[in-house]
Length: 172
Image (tube, rainbow, N blue to C red; front, side):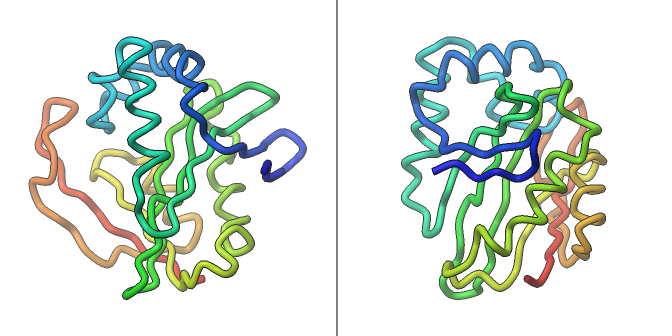
């Protein structure tokens, strides 16, 4: 099942057979991705890329849906509804984009389609989790209308600094 977001943006289900393309994308964007994503250093060969994809696709978390992002006909990143909590009705998002696709509003346009994508899931709130120095993700959350609801101190050491994790929420 493909989800057409705009003429230039499409989501397709993420598959373990996407490992080579995802590995190539990670390799081409490793320096930027490594600043905020803990898993980047572990995805360094076809086997580790398959494991990375399989762990996400087969997470067994309630409501989880993982997609590859096509921008202008090329795989340009990953977008996920990581889970939908049955108790809190919160849908947690995750995403990353190759540098070439950044600055074109790709994720913001995907987020605009989320109410439709989450229809029937029980989700009432979208949650963004952003490291404090990941200004691009923070801007996406804020542009969507989300508000900061919590901060977890000393969440992760990355990009040569301990960073807080900011949690933003947006009611659907």
